[in-house]
Length: 63
Image (cartoon, rainbow, N blue to C red; front, side):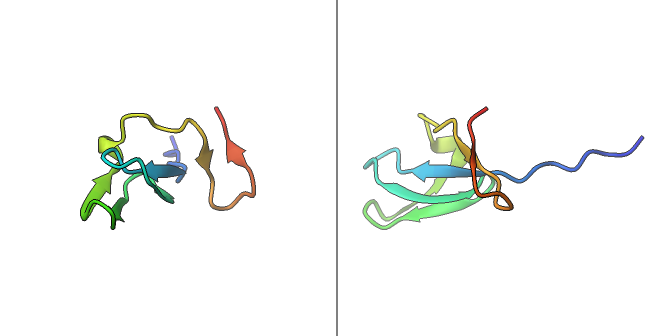
């Protein structure tokens, strides 16, 4: 049985403290907020945007 490769999707990082839009990055990335002087991880994002980006495509995935 062949293993299915995990699809790498990018999510929108928004700082949970100041609400600033930071970047679109992979789900396992960490992004730095210059306003708050702190690193943001995907697990800290409370209101996750349901849209995701496949870096090999030109469209958002909504589901």
